[in-house]
Image 1 (cartoon, rainbow, N blue to C red):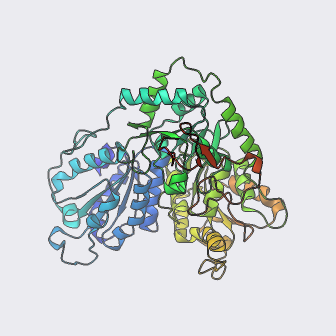
Image 2: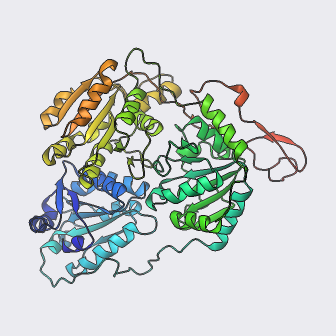
Image 3: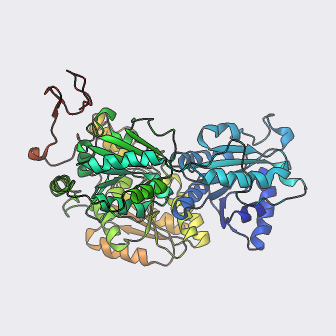
Length: 590
């Protein structure tokens, strides 16, 4: 507990059990001393998601506790979620006594082995004298380079053993083989700058690494200096102000049409802290087929993994972008991108994100737009599904104020995530946007909100389906709705929330949507708002599986704006498909 205190830990999310009781006994004393505060979750998975979101919102390392056996395995989904989204987290699990390890003792699982593929590093504490060093190394590894989760497994008898404790200061213990990332190479920065200066149709493609490194101000300066349009991934939301003219919003499967058209037609793609995820790229050979690529990433393993860049820049995103700014001091766009920005403006005009007409049942997009108007500066967490994509499309978030499970797509993430954010920022407004199916996966955490008086507002966009599953079954499985309909067995959410001691609100009438939302958001305590919406509304635009980003469905037809489907080789004059990178006749690069 003292080692955690030394590393600035203010909050721990956890659930006790037999093997971790020695640690919880000391936790009781640490809380009495005012060192930190423990938040008792209702399920270990909720603890991991809360610690994860705490880290995403603050930029600090999140911490959670769980006991051995089923307690430890309940942590796995949250560890995997943090691993996929590169979130710094220290997970401390109890374990059976050292002599019992490997004997199939009561509540024993090899959590060290189970989690090896989804942590940056892990330890089983065999000697209590190592605890100070291990905690220091854990925080160093979790937060440095590309962030991620680490695991410390503590056998019960280690927790009970008396020893001479020596405090270890943060950063003073460096494990063998550990290397901090090196600054971006000056030659790579210069090569990247030359491509930017030459480009006529450049595009900044910004991912979660820009959030982790705090690069949003530098990215804004770079975009404005060279008049670069900017698109973000789901993880990158908040790295660039989406209300600015250069903003294109999110790209990918449910990205904006203009972002997807831009990435298909750009001649230079500047990837900053992004990893070319399949939900972003669509069919890979159709992703930025005309573009040279600059890839800036702190993790060398990501550079060239999916798309080989012309200029790789390995290093921290903020350092790299600031180096580009320093090297380009005095540069101006000189009108190079004017025609490109005009074309993008035309796409924005003809292919905007659409809110359905205000008739019949409430449309889910109306709910998200209402939240954007009523709570523009809130922290938003989401669950996973259609509601997540609508929120990503229509909300405008500041840095670290968009908290969503992207890589793993973890249903049940949103409510405990909001709990973690609210714990970190008790005076801020925190809103969880959820679906009626995903909210049920961790709805027990309403008890945690009630116990600690966390004023989280949960807004459920309730269409009675596993919405994204239903949309795929409609579109690609002949409308065979197998196991996706949720109305049978659906609880009365308003009464269920009230049973936890949380205010419940039901909204089903458009005329009262704004007023009821406003009243619920103004409620001083936690509130659960169940909004009944159209059952069969689909989330568009959508890039179908196997299609390129320019082949979206759900768009109005404007053939006069269509991207050219053929390209002419400048070397031999042969016409070929626009997705080709090389001429099939002479082999020249197109």
